[in-house]
Image (cartoon, rainbow, N blue to C red; front, side, top):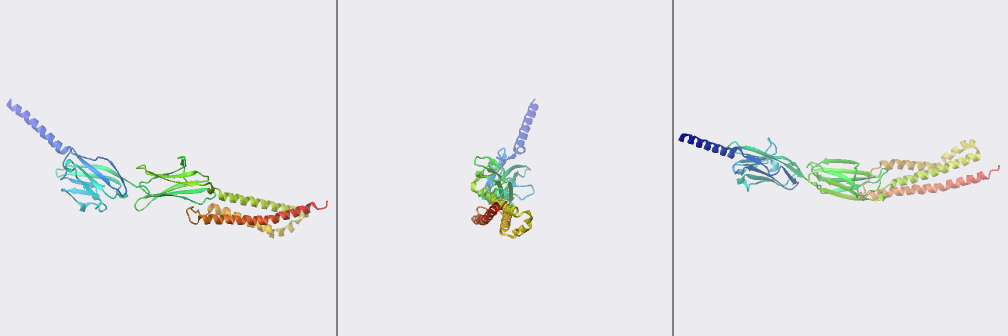
Length: 359
């Protein structure tokens, strides 16, 4: 019986020792307090790792790295940081936080965050007994553009083109136009580019042929939800200016052509239609030259206005651009009116002679 009791006691002791070994080695795990870390460009980020259950990791090797075959971001070994083995882009930018290293918790603080720091990070713990484990976390780097500008280009026959520009964003932001009531307006175009530092530069345009009141350019970061707004008011005076001038010129051209046709008709009625060959010299007269001048002016404006190079309202030369085209139209209208009066006088003379023809 004594031998049997001793066997039970030995079994209990063996089981207890086996559980202790399992608890001290096989159950260690590396975890992280957060799987997702958010940091701004120029700021700092803290990547923390924890060994559970609580375990002193002072003499373990702790390594942060981006990928398996890359140089470490930071390496801690033998109770010291191995700065000479870190990747060059992280030298003098990392700080090892080991206040709680006796409880298995450490952290790596990265200073002066740049867009190149964005991505997946891994921290690993290993010791001489063969223990090794890895935890992963993602660092999301964000940047909000500092300045947003709105440019209004010179109106043309299609309307007014409004352009919104903004740079210095990361990741790629979302853009939209809104009216004064907050309703989204469909943009005419959107484009983006990235510079050498990987910052996004955005451009969005809106073509409108009527006043929208207050137009707002909205840009927001999809990661942080931060939004920037810039607005501009489009005055009614920007719209249909060229269209009004063109309509006025066409109206005057139509009146002059009608008067010229009446004048020719009066000559034909007075002298008969056989006098058409005698009317050929009229083609070299100043009324015909006036009509030719008017036709050339209309062709010039018809070609120039739709296809002219757009000029921004912020351009210092914009008032000059608008003034010369307005003054030119004034001159053309003055000349047309000046030549219109003689044509009317000639028509009246012909009508008077027509009424005095003996029957």
